[in-house]
Image (tube, rainbow, N blue to C red; front, side):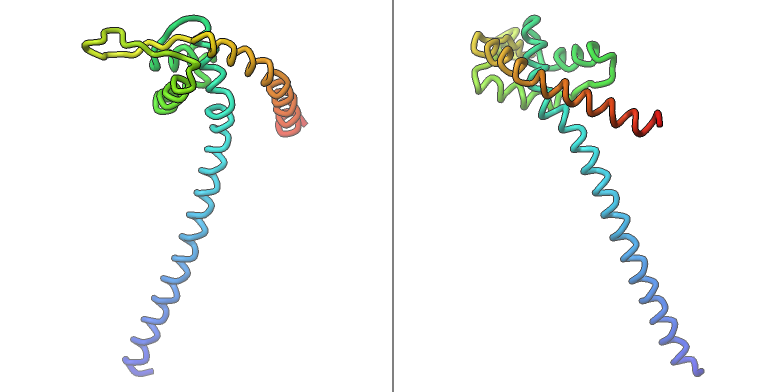
Length: 154
């Protein structure tokens, strides 16, 4: 084989290897995206399903600011769930817009932190959601226990 053909063969080998690596990369990336989606969907059970009712619960105990709400949830769940303030503050804005809570600046001039309180409408919403969610939460607990038993105690 002359050097020209040897050179062409090397280029073709390199291109073939490059193609193989690109396909491998695409597969790995798809796997990582799938894992990330699964993690996000598990997290959404908490943030979308339980966070709004639990924030209303925390505020039913007494007024609080966003950081303290996150801290209180962390304390009440023994550190197993500490929602980020990045999830708490948009929720507080939504609850305020829906008139379930009212936020007032601790110092209107400095606007350092907003203290949120449950409104009467918010308290009624909290009681209603609590009543509606109870069977769903009980059902979810049963499902989790079955899955846990199947996976870890068989």
